[in-house]
View 1 (cartoon, each protein chain N blue to C red):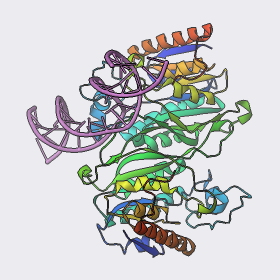
View 2 (spheres, rainbow over the protein chains, first blue to last red; view 1 turned 30 degrees about the vertical axis):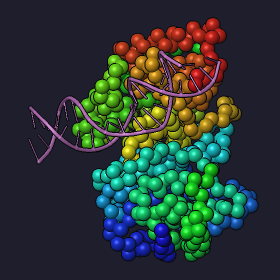
View 3 (cartoon, helix red, strand yellow; view 1 turned 180 degrees about the vertical axis):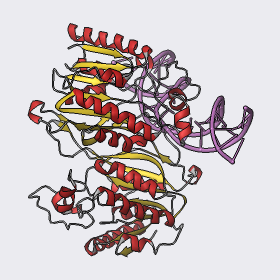
View 4 (cartoon, protein in one colour; view 1 turned 90 degrees about the vertical axis):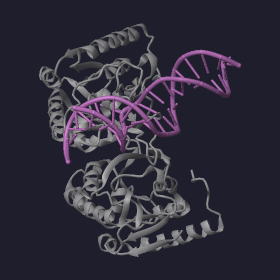
Length: 252
Length: 252
DNA sequence: CCTCTCGATGAATCCATCT
DNA sequence: AAGATGGATTCATCGAGAG
C-alpha cells in the first residue's frame, strides 16, 4: 500500500481531500488539557505540560495547545465534519482523548455528523502513581461511523481495551507518541486495502500501522519537523512491507 | 464497622443525611442508555434493554430507566449536589457510567460542586463481541473530590483500571451487579474507618465491599426487593468481619 | 487434581413485523 | 408514517460436569 503526506494546517489540507475517498479517520489531536484552569492550559507549551521537569530528552514541542474547552470543541468539530465529508458511507472515525476532554470530544464527534458508537480504553501500565488518588492509567478513544455500518464488508472482532506503554528510548520521536502495536489493532476497523486518514499525524505512528496492516494512508501535519520524521518512518514501513520484513504479529 | 439502610427515593432520603458525615460517595445510577433513539432508551425496562432475549434468569428489573439525556443530567446533578453537602471536606465521589453517558455524568459531577479528578475503566472480559466493531469491553467510573484532597490522611496508591467479570450463577442477584472484588479496591479511596455512601444501592455490593475493607456504609434504595437483598448481604458481611472469616484478599 | 468439553449468556445492536 | 414489540444474531468467557 502507499501513503501521502500533506504539510500545513489540518483544516486547509483536509478541504483538498476528495469526498468519500477514505475508509477510516484515526487521529490524536492535541488534548489541550494538563491544567485545571484555562490559564494553566493556555500559558504552558506542550513540552512543559506533558514531560517531567528535567527529563533528558529534547523532543520538539507542538502547537495547538492553547485552546480553551469551548474553542477546542469548535476546532475539533470542524475538522471532524470535514473528515466526515472525505469518508465513504459506512466508514469510521477514531479520536484519542484524555479524561479531561471526554465530553468535549464526544460532542465534537457528533457535531461533525458521526454516529457515536463507543469508547475504547488504552491502558498504560507505566503511568505515574499518585499518592492518595487513582492513577490516570488510561487514555480513551471515542469512535463513530458515517451512517450505518456494513459488518459483512469487514467482519472483524476487535477488543475494547488495549495495553501498551508509550514508546521509550531511541524509538521515541514525539512527546505524545502512540505505540504502533496499539495502532495496528485499531486500523483493522478499516477495510483491508482501504485508506486511513490522520489529520494530526505527528510522527506518523497511525500511518506506519496502516501500512504494516495492508491499508493505505493519508496524513496531514502542520509541523515541518514532524512531517519530516513521519516521512522517514513511513518510507521505512513501505520498505519493510515490500521486503516482507514487517512483523506479522504486532510488537509487544 | 456498621451499616445503615434507608428505603425510598434517593433525593428525599439524601436530604436526611447530616452534612459532612460521610467520607466518600460511590454509586452506580441507572444509565438510561441501551437504545438508538430516545424512545428506545426511555420506553423499555432495564430488563428489556439489558438482558438477552430468552435468558433463563429471573432477576428483578429496576426503575429509573426512563430519562432522556437532559433530565438524566439534571437528576444526577441534584443527587450529587446533595451528596456533596453530606460529604466532609476533602472527601471523594465515584460514579459509574457507560460510554453513552460519559459526558452527561461528567457534567453532573461538576454541576454538583465536585472537582472532577479523573476517569477509571472497569474491564469486563466477558463482554459480548460485535462483528465488524469494537467490543464495549469497559464501563467507566468518573471521580472527583470536595475541594482539596489530603493525601497524608489516606496515603494509598490505587489503580486506574479494574478487571473482573460480572457475578454469575448463585451469586448474581441484580441485572447490573458490580463485582465485590472491584468495589473492594474502590472503597480504599475512603479513609479507613470512614463512611461510604451509595444512594443507588441496588443489591448492596458497594456496602459489602466497604464493610469487608473496614469502612462504614450508608445505603439508599428505592426498590423494596433490592433493599431486602442488600440487607441480607450486609448482615452477612458484618458477620464475616466479626468472625474473621472475610477473605483478606479480594475474591477473584 | 487437572484438563477438556459443553452450554449458557452478556448495562448489545439491529431489523422485521405489527399496531 | 411513526411508534411499539419481539426476536435473531454473535462469540469470548466462565461455570458445571465429565474424563
